[in-house]
Length: 87
Image 1 (spheres, rainbow, N blue to C red):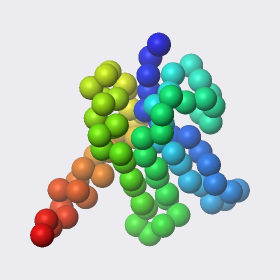
Image 2 (cartoon, helix red, strand yellow):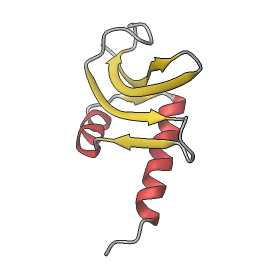
Image 3 (cartoon, rainbow, N blue to C red):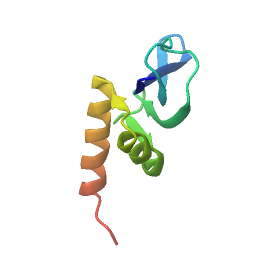
C-alpha cells in the first residue's frame, strides 16, 4: 500500500476548504482516508495552512509521499513557522 499525503476537498460550491489527509494512493480524492493531518483554507487572505506537526512528521518518516500541492504547503508552513518571532 502506497500512502500519499494529499488534499481532500470539502466546503461549499465556489468556497473550497481542504483537509490534508494520509490515504492509500488508489483511493479517490474525497474517499476513505487513514488520518487527517492538517487543513488548508484558500478563502482567507492570506490562505490559512494548519498541520498537526507530530502526525505530519510521523507519516513522512513512515514513507508517505506528499502530493505536489501538499509539498508546497508544507514548505510554506515551515517558512512561516521559521519567520515567527519567538517570545
